[in-house]
Image 1 (cartoon, rainbow, N blue to C red):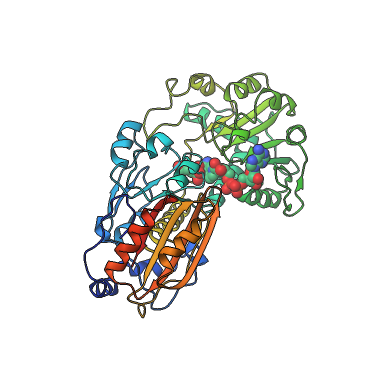
Image 2 (cartoon, rainbow, N blue to C red):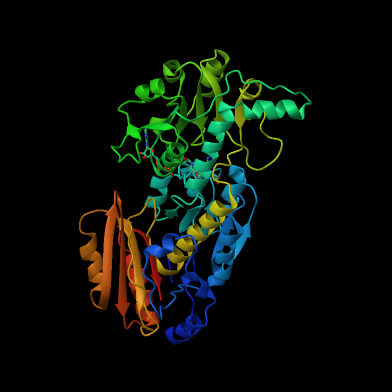
Amino acid sequence: MTSARDIRPRQDDLAAQAQYLATSPSASFHSPSSHGSALTRTIPVLNAKHLKPFATQDIKVLLLENVNVAGREILQQQGYQVEFLKSSLPEDQLIEKIRDVHVIGIRSKTKLTERVLKEAKNLIVIGCFCIGTNQVDLQYAAEQGIAVFNSPFSNSRSVAELVIGEIIALARQLGDRSNEMHNGTWNKVSNKCWEIRGKTLGIIGYGHIGAQLSVLAEAMGMSVIFYDVLNLMSLGTARQVETLDQLMAEADFITCHVPELAETKGMIGKPQFEKMKTGSYLINASRGTVVDIPALIDAMRSGRVAGAALDVYPNEPAGNGDYFNNELNEWGNDLRSLKNLILTPHIGGSTEEAQSAIGVEVAQALTRYVNEGTTLGAVNLPEVTLRSLTMDEPNHARVIYIHKNIPGVLRKVNEVIGDHNVDKQMTDSRGDVAYLMADISNVSAAVIKDLYERLESLNSRIMTRILY
Ligand SMILES: NC(=O)c1ccc[n+]([C@@H]2O[C@H](COP(=O)([O-])OP(=O)(O)OC[C@H]3O[C@@H](n4cnc5c(N)ncnc54)[C@H](O)[C@@H]3O)[C@@H](O)[C@H]2O)c1
Ligand SMILES: O=C(O)CC[C@@H](O)C(=O)O
């Protein structure tokens, strides 16, 4: 039995359910991941009972944007109905599809706005198979009781390696020399081509990617400075600077690794370019809104910026093809006309290693959430977990009550569950939303139905699920 959102309860009695669970195909769920994924955050319980709130084949999953096969397989092995599409969908088609599904998996392109999520009447969980979660209205999702998971660092190394490659490529004008050779021109020059040894790298945003990059850059003889809103421990001999202006003025190479936020929108614009040293370089592999591209074009034309690498853009196509044109971004042709400018199609995290690690990590988080209600790693709900029920506890039920964080709720919930034997319980809140999990023993199907209906009738209710 689960939420009022219309996933219907199985009619089996509990004994039959236990029998079904014992032979469930979900054994892979507890197998260890080779990439140290989120799974390692939970302690596996021997003889754990796999809670299945409903026939797994009734769970509908929509995967967009070519989610990696490793993730797809984990969801398919659960018995869920998995629909897979290579690209994202236009909003009207997305709304049509999302009405029907319980789980959606996306990457950076699909925008799950309030308008889209309003139509998602059955949705219980969103998986962002990437780092960024700016494409989802996290607050609105939380208010609807929809959990959101991502993969916080599985592609960080891939991005850091790409940036290292770009620093050298820009310093040596590799893109231009290669283009010339492709066009039959031999142009053997050293003018304004540099070693990176001894140069200063300025990192904006010293999180997972920025810190990884810092270590790699120092290993190649660069000096590293960084700017971050948080006061952070510097790795190696890197040095935190106090202002963005200071970083812009000191660095030879500047690279952006901040999330898309209201405060980071247009954070590198005309005033910042004017602070840069003449002949310095800019790299952006964070989000397309962080750099003002017309201002970059001006700075490159004036010679202030000697080269740049862009991996992300304010508007990106839904899928692969001939779409990077002026219709998408009006400055496209101006950008293409510039020398020593590396343009890549948002591939910072696109390596085999990163994509399969992300696939496994996010698919496991989704499976754990659907089957056990565990929110560890959720980016918009409080992190709540209870140790797994075991096969020796066949008549237990797990109550999950997602509710508004208002005074007096726990008293009312305890009036409902307090007549039963509550083995364990955990509750936590995050902003306006709270998440309660309680394991109750010796319950019959009739009791479960009664508990469910009483919790659903409370005015604090956002979503009730009972797993057994
Ligand atoms: N190109 C790609 O394929 C690709 C791949 C992965 C991530 N990304 C993007 O890169 C971003 C950074 O990734 P991460 O894993 O390093 O994130 P992170 O959260 O680990 O680090 C971000 C850092 O930015 C800092 N920050 C936030 N706002 C800031 C501001 N206004 N000024 C200065 N610093 C600020 C934070 O304090 C934090 O230290 C992601 O949010 C994502 O959008 C792109
Ligand atoms: O794979 C993607 O679409 C996004 C990659 C990257 O920007 C991320 O946020 O992890």
